[in-house]
Amino acid sequence: MSEFLSMGGDGAYVWSAYGITLATLIINAWLVRVKRGHALRRARELATQTEAPRKQPKVHRVQ
Amino acid sequence: MRLPRWFHQLGSPPHVYRLADRLAPWLGTLGCALLAIGAVWGLAIAPPDYQQDEVYRIIYIHPQTAYVAMMAYVVMAIASGVGYIWRLKVAHAAAVSAAPLGAWFTFCALCTGAIWGRPTWGTYWQWGDPRIMFETLLLFQFLGYMALRSAFDDRDKADKVTAILAVVGVVNVPIIHYSVEWWNSLHQGPTIMRFGSPAMTADMLWPFLTMVLAFTLTFYWLLLRRLQAEIVEREGDARWLRELAPEGAQ
Image (tube, rainbow over all chains, first blue to last red):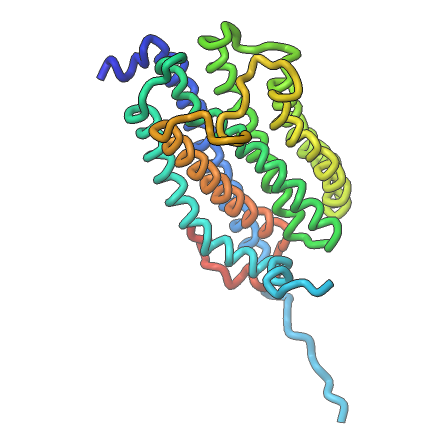
């Protein structure tokens, strides 16, 4: 196991590169989750605010 | 020119939002599973390199992140072009969504490249090396695109102006790819996308390609989720948004 972790003495390079890549993926997954959640919350707020005044327009039929 | 029906549907924000909702879970699950498989394969199962020994294992992440960064730019440029020509708001939203992802992946490629450079070239960074310089330029292209967007209050105007920037800047993508052939570079030449067969044996090639697919799927998963957020922001209080699941389930 320690042989695997040491990567022939270059473990620091290999693991830091993999660590940075993993961090990039996790950060991006988290960022997009936050952004999407925020956008959906904002849309729901707008929907409830505009719910009351918005009515179907009256249609006058011409005979 | 008659455009097919599916192309027209891609111009409809609700259609694209729902399509993304259907595709994203598959892309995300498959992408993450392949990332795990590819990482174990590349780190533990693939044989060591005859020249670089174990440190070569960065090859299972570094070219993939660089490739995804370039793909992100191409996606951004094509979406910008389509948005500009056909005035599709969804296409502009896709371009906007690709930019931060591209910036993150470019940053990641530069970092992993620098880490790999130390034990193999003896240096983290080489000013003037064409591959490194054009890849760095790509990072600034993404950042510049986002900075230019934020300078506009009017979203439609921002869409148009940044679309031109994105399309013009795509010229850097082939330059990055061919930089190792056109100029003397510390960076090694292409391993996979070159004339003849790949310069890699099958026991290294398969985990390599697994990771290429894994990063590609993961990128499109992130892109679709970002696009959904962007569409919702742009649509404001549109009627179709109210019919969405109340919590907008992930």
